[in-house]
Image 1 (cartoon, helix red, strand yellow):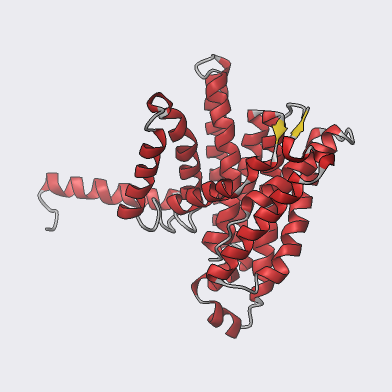
Image 2: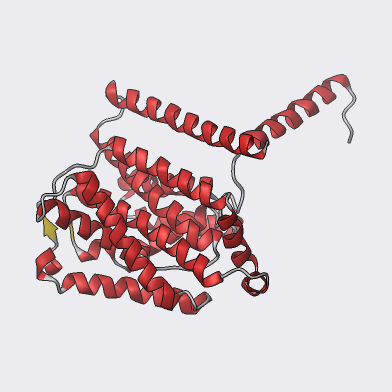
Length: 328
């Protein structure tokens, strides 16, 4: 029965994803959405991959990582070099970028994930900067000038498909035995160890999976704007991704999706107030953190059964008021 419920849940998620895709595709087909809108939607999709994957580390496992842009850069550069210098087709190049980022994530994970809290945050921050400086000094990939001539292969369809795949994979991990182990580490790492959970193994697993998706996001980004340089993946980029996770809610996948879309659209919507754009943007973030310190959705997820219960409760109350039978 539980497996049947899980399958039904996945089918509903896929059905909603297909419905949203059909709506967006038709809006593009009939030119309701122009190229500028498509670009913003594509960047939102890439940010969803980044935020949802980082949420696996920061939100689900409870480990503060500030080096996600470093994994993104590894994937972006490897996929770009595979396309430009080796002539490898786009999708295999993208997978190579993801694998390279996953390998780096695993190698970095073993020594660093024995650390906790602030120490881990500082270490991952340092890792991201080391990766950036390495690319600055490697002439083979253009050094500080950056890498040019990347073919434009990323499309809205591919980004949308990979964003859906990312969400489904992360949801599947969260609902599995491994996901429960990750959550136990987040709640109380010492208690999890006492129960026999290999905390380092699970933390490295979360780090590796998240790094793989960040690498794929980097490859998509590089093949969309056709040019990358080390500055594109600096400390501020990591902070942007962390803000998406925190604003949406640490541990909430739907929150990460929602905040990724909002924080991609918001700076563009404020372009007409160019002098005050960053001030308004920062104020919005501060207000959210004051009034919703656990993020817009906290650790909650939207579910069909939950929505049905709320509607039933709402309409039940209204019926009670009309019939004069509602309890005060």
